[in-house]
Amino acid sequence: MTAPDFVQLQDAPQLSIVAAVDALLDHLAAALTCAHPEILGHPDDGDSPPVWLADVVTSDARRLQALLHRYRKAVDYEQSDHPSRRLAPIE
Image 1 (cartoon, rainbow, N blue to C red):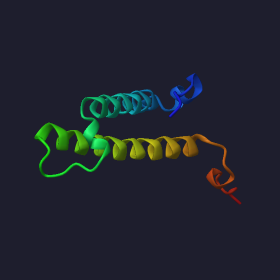
Image 2 (tube, rainbow, N blue to C red):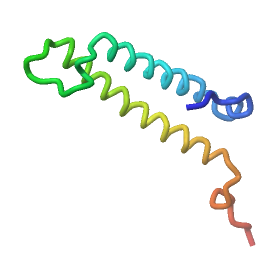
Image 3 (tube, one colour):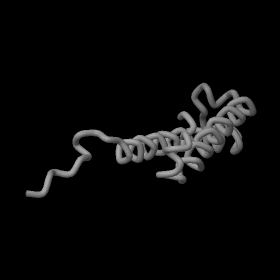
């Protein structure tokens, strides 16, 4: 996700923290994968709790990132001049 620019932040200041959380989730997933490379395979019941929890946290982080990206697209769309966003003229 790209960082919001000044104009976007004027209209939607929440995008600054959305972009920051997105970046933080990338770092979290990378750190957990480095600490527990076995999560790249198929974790099994014999793995220790930190391993399978790292797998769950990484998976959930990716799902949260997908939601943040959808939120950002929705805000961008709402701020756009897309023809379907324009109000019909009052007659």
